[in-house]
Length: 146
Image (cartoon, rainbow, N blue to C red; front, side, top):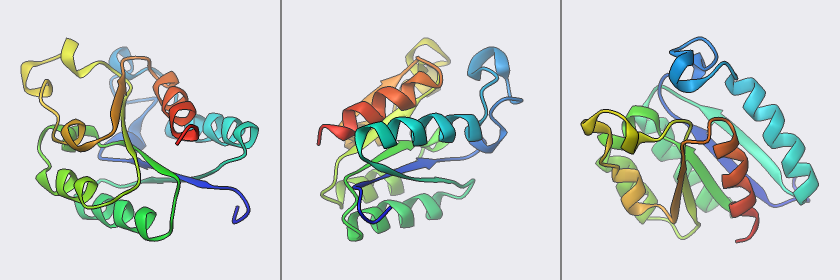
């Protein structure tokens, strides 16, 4: 992995339940399925993936900083519910120089009103949402261009 640029792919709360949690919204693809798809595409792009998931906000903050300090090429983050609540993630993203891409399986703007505001999106380079697991693939393709 050291010979290929690394993209950190960070996943927030409840994403470990993908495939079984509200499949009518999030689909039946698991996080492991997404990791495998990303690994295959990363290999094609000459990249490496560092895939992580946590239900704890501080872990995500630590990993954003770790990505920055380890000279990762970019961060792709699906912050889950922290999207709408986390000033800590906003500050962490603003505090690093590497590009961060926010990703969502569903389209938050087509859902409940409380999901329409994204602290992460306000700090991120860009957001890709609403394309299911394909959102991650689109984000990886975008990250490869940095």
